Image (spheres, rainbow, N blue to C red):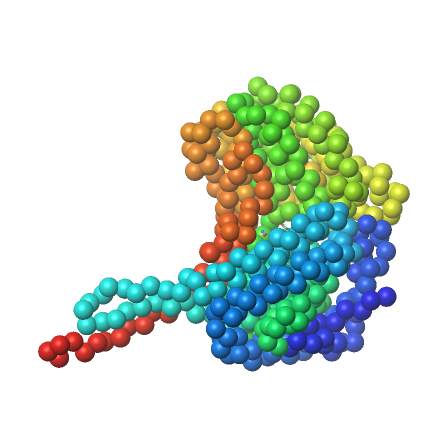
Length: 477
Ligand code: NAD
């Protein structure tokens, strides 16, 4: 059985604890490999290595660093099948999805490699005898903590802009899905990133994650995960007075107006809650439908959902805990009197394979104040809620503790724009549903977090402004 160690200073590092944790393949319920259980001693070594590498990284000219990013993206594409296999062994996701994730992850390095050195700052016209300019400077060592749903993508999404802004990184991936992140860091070393620039420490949140957030040399934390853990990390960051980006959960509303192209809208709505078996923070899990088209939409939704092939098109829940949690929500739905128009059960595939599969599920008869409509399930479950007016649709959409994403389906451009303006969410999709592109800033309002990943905005979140004022000698002085 494989044993996976930390990757620190361009080499494998065994855990000080001598302890290894089993990782489960969710497609079969069997053990895929064992990973190192790091603690504060390993974090200390990794952070020291990252701190020592800051100057070496800074000395490499921006365009040369851009070339390293291009080399890393190329290496990821060359090794896409192997990287996807690692990802599949710990997430069970279909190969096409895993390959798409590797491609997207490589694109982060293309994009930020191309932006290397940009944006760099402004000159300010303050007075004739002053030359005033701003520079964007790195923080130093960034601690990156990622969840299990799209592991290599989450690591690339944070590390590419963090490194491009001039920082070095120590990543603590989820203990359930560590291997693709370690391979990413190894590839970075293989293409020429200096030792210590890209480090990975494995282990649990309590052992390695907490030690990373509290380490005095870590100058910023980028966290993607649950609200519960985000709160803990946010408090520590406040105590330490360091910035933190919190990319947390969602319960995103997807609104279908009566004038929408219903086939396209339903197709988008099904993808929005079944992609990655619903284990996407930006999943569209509250489907708000104009009452006049509710029956037609539910009929189409059930037909389209029935065509989602569990196993080869939609993978399992990624952890055993999550498998049980989603089943808990099936019971909650029953107790709240919701009607399962389709699904609401463990999938037949689970019994055949021992994997953690559930059927994609559509609930009707749901009140927006119920637990089913308010709590993030993180599984392939959507609730359908009717509305009568545009105002009511906006009110229902905004009646959530979360504010990550929203969708609007209508042929009326004025309605699309006015409704989009009123939605309290970090991103709105009109007549489409996607996770956006690497270029589109991504992040939450309300309990979905703060700070932004992706796009040029992420570079701003991984750097800080310095303003330099130079008094000039002017003629006559
Ligand atoms: P989680 O909060 O349990 O764990 C996330 C990471 O934090 C893991 O690496 C874990 O080991 C670590 N961790 C746990 N406790 C810690 C502590 N005390 N200190 C430091 N690190 C700690 O989340 P999860 O269950 O892995 O992921 C699912 C959640 O992530 C969902 O709520 C989902 O919405 C969210 N998510 C958000 C985004 C986004 O971009 N907004 C993307 C993906 C997932």
